[in-house]
Image (cartoon, rainbow, N blue to C red; front, top):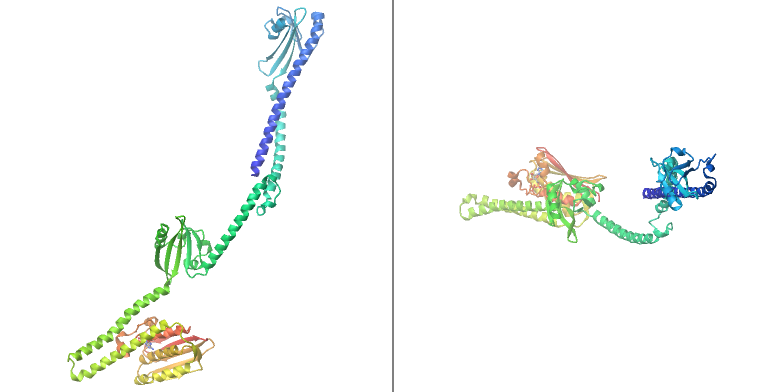
Length: 551
Ligand code: ADP
């Protein structure tokens, strides 16, 4: 704007200067010409009376540098000329001013030189003698005058241009400075230009309105950010060109990005074909959703279009972590399949034996064995059903009672209950205890110890040992069950806490396990916020250690 004002002022100054120069020169030139003609006329009338009295003698000894005098006879012959010898001059009858003077008593004319650089004014008067006295004066023409004074004009223009530049700059500054200093946050307090008052009033009004709207928008965006920041679900807002408008903390973590993602194309965060297609579908107006694994988690992505006035203005992506749900679903499916399978095996055995007995196909001496088999399978079925019921109770029971429990008492009780099976397998039981009283659920703690000791007896060697060790360290209450049994090969160790998992299925009939004991242990330990560790060497034995945090 400063440049424009500066250029305008300078241009106006230069145009005014040029016009002034032209008009002044024209006026001066015209004035000069007229005064020249008047002078000629005065001189002519003065000289005419003398020539009338004295004739040609008047010119004897006459000298004039300013004017040229010519005396012409009525026939046009030149009688006298102040510059050229009269005899050498041609007849002047045809000269405009001469013929006019002969006709009317007075004549005048102007003639230009061949080069047009000069012009001559002629004034002529008829004398009483009939002769014509002519007086003339030569001047340079306007063009020649301009050429002649062009250095002066150039100098004037240059100095004026410099002066105009300096003054224009100052003027521009003085015009622009108050505009630059306008306080647009308080427009009505400015008093630099009166003409701006209506505009500033309007700006002030709009400024207040915009401020209010901005405040409301900021409040809304803060609320939106606070709500979405605390969400566990990822939330991404895209515009219709897939540019990220907003991304909450959960989504930043999921896509491994930060605040710089805003404004970028969503493709820079996720190049997946499925995601790309789903967004495309959503932008086309259809709801789309899909599940995908990200790292160790499974996510469900829900994508919907955002519309305004019936037009698509973007899309919203909601990312739900469904790892636990998916895991639970898978577990439930597997569990149902496993339960049916596990129940079927003993039932088939029972039905088979019963049918043989029913049809009299069993020899009398084998009847006892068959009935024993039915009893054993039924007992196994019972244990299995009890374990299943127990596990589903643990699944359902999310807030079991907590009380102060003396682990030593629980350990003694378990060893008491397991004394008979231990004796059967000739396994020696030991308890190494320290005072360990903790807050927890007695039933759960009993089941942890029972299942670990039951395994330690079941998978022990004849004449082996079982030792329960209870320690109270500053960090934890440590419970370990150690046996000198068959041990677990390293490759099976990660899986033995899974439901129905058994290392040696073929011998499960003899060992009588259900594959659910360690699942119950894992569940009950997790409830107490503890952790389970297992070290085992095939052929040497197993140690299962449970660490409970002090409550
Ligand atoms: P089960 O009822 O079959 O014992 P668990 O869940 O208690 O089921 O144990 C899973 C499997 O882990 C068992 O089938 C067994 O193969 C193995 N196991 C558990 N404890 C021991 C142990 N102390 N020594 C050797 N193997 C064990």
